[in-house]
Every structure is written in structure tokens, then in C-alpha cells.
Image (tube, rainbow, N blue to C red; front, side, top):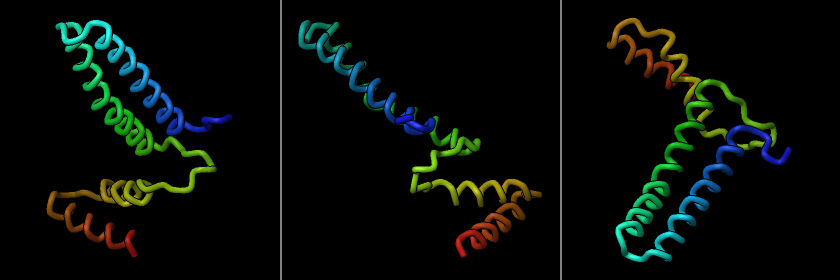
Length: 112
């Protein structure tokens, strides 16, 4: 399979969504011009260009936190170590102060 995991599929879908929707909005603007409909189309296109990458990033980050595995061909997992020590910290919180001390200890442990 060419797009072997959820992260690759989400990356491809978000690019297609941005290019397709922005292309339609741009064509509306070219046809109508600076009429109210054209300005709305460009506004919607810019809104999509700003929000689609952010939402795709948040979805993939949430999937990574919940344990959705990457494919075997993936070579870089920048979030892997971060989530391990955050999960270890969350398991042992008793009070806010001891939680901060434990967070520092777990962080030092994982960085060594």
C-alpha cells in the first residue's frame, strides 16, 4: 500500500483539501472579481489555508498520543520520547507540588 499509515493519509488528504478548495475559491474570485462574492471566496480560501494544516497537525498529534502506530518505513518519531515521560509523570501525581518534583525527576531520567 502506498499510503501505509494514518499519518501519511492525513498528510495527503490535507494537501488535497487545501489545493482543491483554494482552487475553487480562486476560480470564483477570477470569475466574479472584487464583488462581495469574490471577496468572500478569497476570505474562505485564506481561512482554509490557515486552519487545515493546524487541524491536521492536531489530529495526528492526538492519534500519536493515543497509540496509533507509524508504519515500519518511518524513520523519525519526534514525539515518541516526549509522550513517554509525560505519560510516566501523569501516573504518579499526588499533589501539585510533588507532581512538579516528580515531573523534573522523570524528565531527567528520560533525558539521560
